[in-house]
Amino acid sequence: MHRSIPFALLAASLLTACSTELDINEPYKDITIVYGLLNQKDSVHFVKVNKAFLGTGNALDMAQVRDSSEYSGEAISYAKVFRVSSSGAVLDSFPLLDSLVQNREPGTFYSPVQKLKYFVTPYTQSIPASNLGVRMFLWQDDSYRLVLNVNGKTVTAETPITNDFKVDPVDQDTVANGARVALRNTAGNSYSDYEFNWTSRADCKRFVVEWKFRYDEVTGTDTVARSISQKIGSPKVSSFVNEDMAVRLSGEIFYSAVESQIKSQSGWQNVDRRIFRGIDFVVSVANDDLHTYLTLTEPVTGIVNDRPAYSNLENAIGVWGSRYEKTTRGKRLSTQSFNELIDGNYTGDLRFCSPQDGFVCP
Image 1 (cartoon, rainbow, N blue to C red):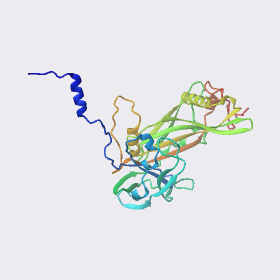
Image 2: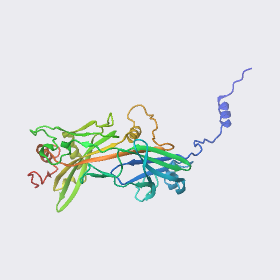
Image 3: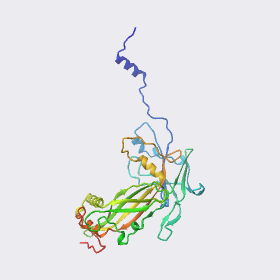
Image 4: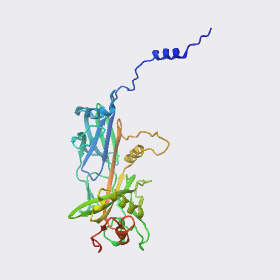
């Protein structure tokens, strides 16, 4: 004979048979997190070594406790960086030392003190090889290998150094009249684009180019140096060596950005005059390791939310990569472009002038 069991009774019996406790935490596992970005212009290189944490309390509260994410001194028993040739030979080594940084801004994690590791490298060469060259402190044709021993496990990673690259001679020139930044046509009746060119070198994967507009604000007897900047583009190379690269700066977008950024400042209209000091082009570049990490951690814009986790470290997560930055400083505007800065639709009410080229500041 079949019997029907009331639904309420069935539900009650199922609930009483289940545990009333839900444990979402797995047993603790030591997960090491490492971030290190090398730049051959630096003589001191910082490496951040932390640990993941797990607990039954509020994660935000735990993040404010220093030893939740920082290892104790004895946990890291070995820490070195090795310079490695293209053939794999170890050429030099540098011990990682401990440092306490006192000025960490308040945020999700413990502050203001944070523990970092660092190593120091000597001068290697100047690029270009002259008294006017930029001093470098890493060998750009070699790789640098990180080796740590953390709680008995070996953490390793190796990354090549992002090379110096050549900016087109005309775009590098800050003196010749023919090399000026032309954002208006020669007739001065329409906007034009300025193209900035360079050639990539070894281990340059992702470039980010921005312009920086420098000027002085004069109010009464006070003069304040200011600058505004904006990204132009972020091209990526398809190969790794000697690829011609370029970005284009729109004249109208430039003047519109100057207007909007200055007018967003409190009291902008109270300035007596502004003196143009120059335009800088800042080119930042990441090697392939850093590029891949950035690509997989950028905000998702499509309908697919899942992304593979990325780390180029063995027995740790994070990134061990390299970057570089090169600046063309002090480019001047063409005559037509400068006239537009002074009298144009976007910036004509900003009281710009220049002590150069015969323009007289009122």
